[in-house]
Amino acid sequence: MAGFLREVYGIAYADLAFLKRNIVTTLISSLVSPILYLIAFGYGMRAGDTEAGVSYIAYVVPGIVAISSMTAGFSSTAQKILIQRLFHSSFDEMVLSSVRISSIVVGKSVIGMVRGLMGTSIMLAIGCLLTPELILSAPLILSVVFCCFTFALLGVMAGLLVDSTPTLNMVTSLVILPMTFMCGTLFSIDSLPDFAGKILWALPLTHSSQLIRSFALGHGLEWVSLLVLSIYAAAFFAIDHYIIRNQKY
Amino acid sequence: MEGIIVADGIVKRFGDLVAVDNVSLSIKKGEIFGFLGPNGAGKTTTIRMLTTMSRPDSGTVRISGKDVYGDYRSARQSIGVIQQLNSLEKDITVRENIKHHALMKGIPSKEIKGRTEEMTEVMGLGDHLDKLVRNLSGGWKKRASIVCSIIHRPRILFMDEPTAGLDTQSRNALWKLIRKLNASGTTIFMTTHYISEAEALCDRVGIVNKGKLVALGTKEDLKKTVGRFAVESVDAAGDTEVRYFENRTDAKGYSDGIDDGRSVTIRAVSLEDVFLELTGRRI
Ligand SMILES: Nc1ncnc2c1ncn2[C@@H]1O[C@H](COP(=O)(O)OP(=O)(O)OP(=O)(O)O)[C@@H](O)[C@H]1O
Ligand SMILES: [Mg+2]
Image 1 (cartoon, chains in turn red, cyan):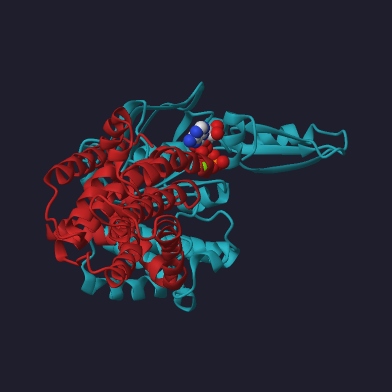
Image 2 (tube, each protein chain N blue to C red):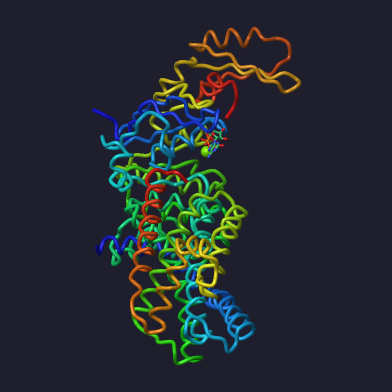
């Protein structure tokens, strides 16, 4: 285990060193979109409303946190890997370094988790100041980390399989963007027609937002969402591992 | 005894192109092996297959007797690779790159500083350690990437055109380092475009052309296949014709017979001649 963690740190070190060097710009850029969501939806469109039995602000803040954990987890990981593979030829150096394949998969996800946490923790703090309905807790933070990790694993897959920046942008528009709006983040999927709700129920962000929201509102653990999300994470991990092990990138 | 690196009929295709076509090689422990070939011959593709970066479509690679795609971790532990394209992280410093590599290669934290100092001393990188890689000149980037590739003291070092683009001073420094590493027991597999480099450094040489291995042997053996003396005649338009002879008397006889104003020189056969004969072009 110690060996594994050391390898993970070794893999992540370059990404973290870069982050450290650019911490201010990264912080600013990871805060802009959640704050815009908060203003546009929380104050602009539905101020004073309630959703699913709580004030809209209390409903939407965990949704925005889920969105941020997805986009930060996915994009920062996918972009890094794409650049390292295509433009810096440095991805091969990790492969060459004799670390376990699983260390590469997890190590590359670290940057997604860290960036996800940077944006979401400030967002959560703001949310707690805005409404007493939101409760900060250790399980809440852990579930945010887990959501970032799951989408970072998806980002690893995208970064490995995609062969140009435009293709990555397309994948982001087709996969990430629809989830952003549809997965029970900004409004409850119960308000949609039944069949749409069923499809959306199967998507990972639906469960990230349910998991996070449940803890944030003090409702405890949403077992089913944790389970579904864990299945997604395991599947993404297995696929990433397979791609790297068999050099299918 | 089986070689330390053994490639057995390796093939790599990219679509219709057979980039490496059934190449078999055996590299002896402790030698400096030179892999020569024109642009696009398949040198880099071969190195990538030997070093576990790219899986052959068919054929096998063994390092120290073990299949590299079976036991990839142990193979990777014993090799160092200096890639042709610079493969450092461009947006962090040289020092951070070295630490990144050292950590990935499992060097204990307390040793990293010492090794970094030792290697930067050898490569003269001291003034550049805290600069971003993207701000370094090509030669310094190359030196930094060499440090990263040998920080774990590999037993086998692959170098894909290590001296391309270096000035004379850096090249000499690198030759010295290659000899030093080799003297301390490191087996070296290098590709180069410079025949003089292969002449100066390598024990044995393989020549690859259009994906096929067309010659393999010691420098002397390969030269013998061409002859011992070369007579080079250049006409007024600058076109060169070369003929090869087994002994000086025949060479002299032939050159004396040229009386149409071409300028004639007699010289010993070089690897360049071998290369020219086998590939039909100069390197
Ligand atoms: N990833 C790839 N996809 C498609 N074709 C490739 C790929 N990599 C190499 N090739 C082709 O394979 C052939 C061999 O390339 P390789 O890079 O091995 O040559 P090389 O001998 O190293 O050349 P150079 O001296 O220019 O470095 C070339 O024709 C090249 O275009
Ligand atoms: Mg090459």
